[in-house]
Length: 169
Image 1 (cartoon, one colour):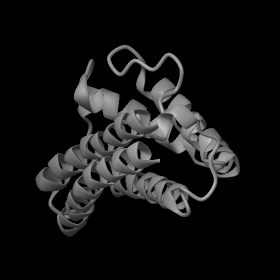
Image 2 (cartoon, rainbow, N blue to C red):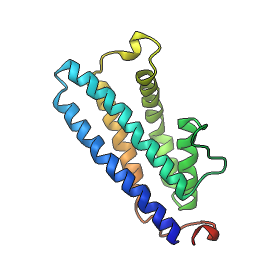
Image 3 (cartoon, one colour):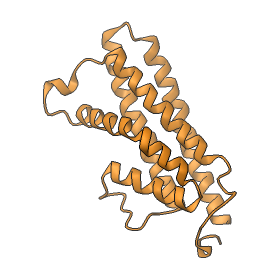
Image 4 (cartoon, rainbow, N blue to C red):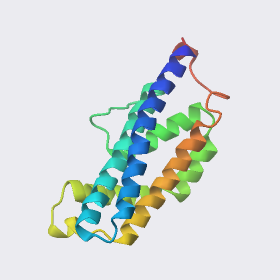
């Protein structure tokens, strides 16, 4: 159990370092939503920073409880996301939470990931289109859903587990 607690602590320290930065970036973006140039740049920064948070979470959770076949360098983001949270939720008896999030919220994350890919790897001018208040509200909603999912996942995390005992020490 000591190894698991140490890995969870590391995961939480990384998550809790990135999350406040992201929330501050959201607040700054909100303050500049009537200045098109600043709003566009800040919105793009928000989208990419949000996925930085999620990718750090995926990596940290896989250090704690790696799904079979995990490869941080080769697996695609959505595949890693799904498999990571399936594994974590199965091991830590949170399958209902995972199912609820996947059934009702995952599609929003997938759509935002597509938007992020267009911003980071633009193929056409339209991929760099102006940010809208609706785009920003969608981002905030997807973050709120993900943040709730992570917080709910962390509640009573070590209470019930189905972990291989060789991992505990």
